[in-house]
Figure 1 (cartoon, rainbow over the protein chains, first blue to last red):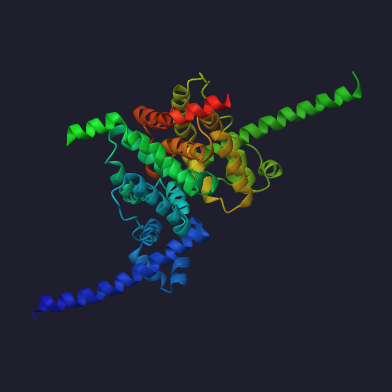
Figure 2: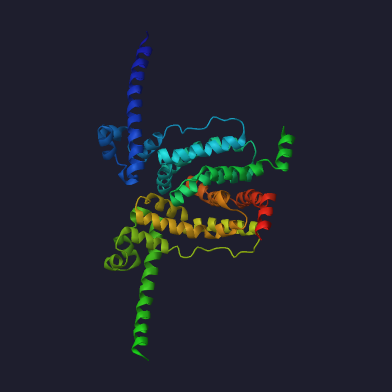
Length: 202
Length: 202
């Protein structure tokens, strides 16, 4: 084994510890954010609950924005529905998963905390990246039937069916409201003009 | 002039002063909220900027929730479009006014501040009342063509066209995105089943 290899083995060991620390702190930071709110998300409080020293937290996450960013990493990969290829089914299932994530992960609190901090440039970038990722599956499904301004409109409209009642009234839509929303969108995806354009492109 | 009348004149004089104080403080509180954020919305800070004593502020608005509520009163009556009776035109104009209000009044910051405070019961009630008021014109227009789950869906969908990009990405939709969204909704309002139901009701 060359010195290079030995060095690499040590690195891997360190990486594993760092990964575990990051995962512990991320989970704790997210828990603090969604149960106690943004004000409670401090290095001292998260360190105490996660069982690490404040020094460790300041080393890995020097600022409160970094700590917030760690909390967002605690969201992990959002669950997405496995696509069936049927647009209506796939949209309904994605929206139901989004609704479940709002409940389980308190995405509404995460989203409003991010909006509050949007004046901080680093925070704005994190927010944009996270929201782009979160919207990707629904965008991919809708790209099959929409384009341009109409595509942007239907993405916001379907996100709004879950996000608006959640942020404006603290409620979530029933299955029949989600299905009604998808059906409204499907009428535009299935129009004659759309079918013609799709066949002209293929 | 009877004593009753004189008493009334004094009352009116007091009312006018109270109304002016309330309006001054409401405007200042809203300005602080949207430019400096929720943390800066304290009795001391608002009193200093508005040019009133802290005592006056505590008398009229004992808690921070009251002060926040004063800020919301500073929004005043949201401008709404005068209805033409044409559903498509009325929806497009309402959404453009909503977009303008997000820009002028920083409704996105107000909304996310309200969402952050939703754990406070009094705050939740204020939020629900305000959002219900804000949605009323668009709900009234949409009630002409929708009902039940579909009505709830299209209200959230159209609110989402403005609110989602604003809260998720700090952007606002172009005219063509707003018009595309309304056109998607109009296709469902104009369906044969809908027309039949409307004629059966009339």
